[in-house]
Image (cartoon, rainbow, N blue to C red; front, side, top):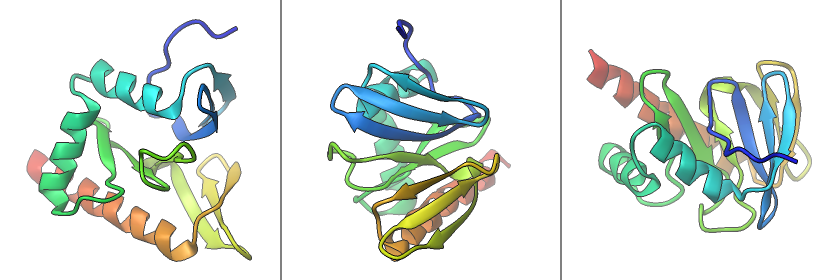
Length: 149
């Protein structure tokens, strides 16, 4: 039984909801299931790194000028940026680490995401929507880097 809270780290590749109360976490060298919702893990991780989910959303909204399906910076110094696959209020919303994506490709009616450790996941999302999320997250990363200088 997993009893400690999980904080997102540099090896976290994706948070995939199993149901309302558990999450499959794909890491660089591990896949674990924890008895917390994806939103609980996101909230806890934002607080762990010194902000709140709401604060991270406000920062992204300010930087990107948009409001829907915003990527967020989980932690600035390691440039850990995650983006949602659907509205973050949805029970089916997964969060993907921008930094750990190696490639992604269009499949018949979903997207295959390949991480840097060569593991892959299939997401029930259109290729165009996924690519748009990657582009938004990349733009947020570029803004973060430019502000660090």
